[in-house]
Length: 344
Length: 141
Image (cartoon, rainbow over all chains, first blue to last red; front, side):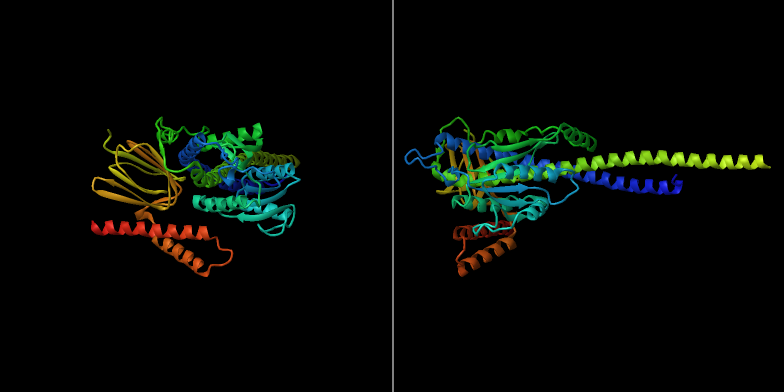
């Protein structure tokens, strides 16, 4: 049996690890709260944008009745031959199954569209690394390097998701779509409404079909066990499980451009679509990224919570072993003394 | 009739402005719009430009890249892509952006995205103009 001093040393080392995982859990919890606040702050904008789009659609159909053409190239539906996939993972690991879940969903997506040409834009280092190992790196507008190719990467964007940076990416995507280099655009990310309401989705971003509602092509729910672990981690870290209630201001935002009056519209539907749709696309991607960031922090918090719990178990079992070893040593000494005395 | 306008400016990040004011000036796509309380209901797209609003005798300025405005008799709500208060504008960054865009236009490379560059240039100019306004008002006080 191992000696008492060695076991004690191991317990100390596990305790140190536990301290680190506990700290990381609390840091992730704090970051999660901040990420949720950001997502919440963007909700008012989301409502307002959806409203203006809805009211524009209410005034005019998506297609120009005179020509039968869509009002905007971003509304045009073509047979899907060339697909663009934007994959949102994290930049860093130690987040449990977060990254591998997203990647698994991506592989499922690629399998689903295996007879199409797929260009991938990777957001986040983990996704980039994974994709680069499997698929060739190509360049948009040049000869294809393979049926599936990686054409872009955005690292360190997620540390502080900046709307302007995202809208630049979205502009490139919209341009490729207008030029008919791609026929549809999907965004794969970890949807996050609250800690217990999450799923992996492939959202179709282009062509724009359903306004103000996520168009989900593929979806994968989390397993019950995973959800319970997440809820438990959130509870012990003091993170709310529920989706935050809409604020007074957010409620007001839902009424944007819907007052029961006859508005004077300064622009024609065509002009409005031209201005609105690129923003809509950019905002969908922006929102997806914000949710993915929140989900990543939640996953890391959960992973660190499990690690701390495991450390506790290890400490308990080591303590038991140590006590046994100590007991055995004492017993042995007594026997030696007793038998020594008997020999006299 | 209401005698003040409730102004709200919302960006993807946050609620930037929420104030009661006497007059609002917005850069509509088809021309500048001056709005006083009691204005007819109106919806318009905004272009790159300057939003200003007056409370009493003080006027505040903001730079806006693109937006959408809903005008009601007692309320103006603006949905803006990117909006900055004059005093928060990073003048150095705007100057750099301006120089970059001008340089790109001068060289006129074959693959230049002309629209995007002009847009960047225009944005930088508006930012600088609005920032200069903040300088003026600060100097006046």
